[in-house]
Length: 356
Image 1 (cartoon, rainbow, N blue to C red):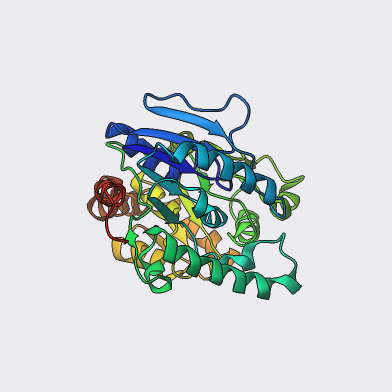
Image 2: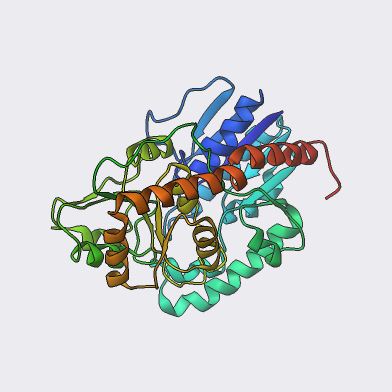
């Protein structure tokens, strides 16, 4: 197949888009044209992959990227077998698509309005209504690939392709008192709780943040001690190599609508790499961590509980037990190889003209 993959919102090296989906397509021998907001000279080079640059869509600056995407999608999909669209706004461009198309639903668009600080409070009600209408429209016009089984309740159909990790063959034992976080750094994702917890533990511990930093979060990180390091965006495989040997991985999402029915991918990534987890009690994260024995569940917005959990993880025997339990559970139930196979069958069916 010749597949066009497009995003104007996500980082070009987004783990789900580039490393999992595009990687699986290329490994299967398919050709991929990737339309994404590359920085100058950052386009990846792989056999079977061709990249074209789009401007990034951020905040209220969305019309220009949408127009550029319409032009490139019209050019590239006339000779393609399939298009995969990764942003809700790109579903408005269905008339420019010359081939069957899939919308990959990553997040709850309606619920995540509350976590977007660029939307004024007075406009959040209309924004939620607009998000719901956009989802309904897209659900009628696209085949749907859903990253979470919980999204099935929002659509009349869809195929669940989970955002599961690639489980490495071997892992590194904990070598230093290093606490890690992978993902977007924001207030909604628990940055304040992380920082306050760090004030309560032995200064020998360090906190390393791997992910793009929201403006409001960046203000909190200014002038902090050298024991807290914000690395900014780091390509997925590099970030995962960087966290190897850490004492514990944090997933301290707050109790916001966008997160309540999601399984944070970082939880599975930590466990797959032999790193125990400290997580807030979101239902899916709690279920995985408690069922596997792979870490500790703490209350929302409770830095004291987080600090106590970090101190407990300093016990080598307890940490090793959690690491072994979590890694075993992910290997048995959440390995990307299973979801990759399901994805390939689904995409080939859509490309072949499956009844929509």
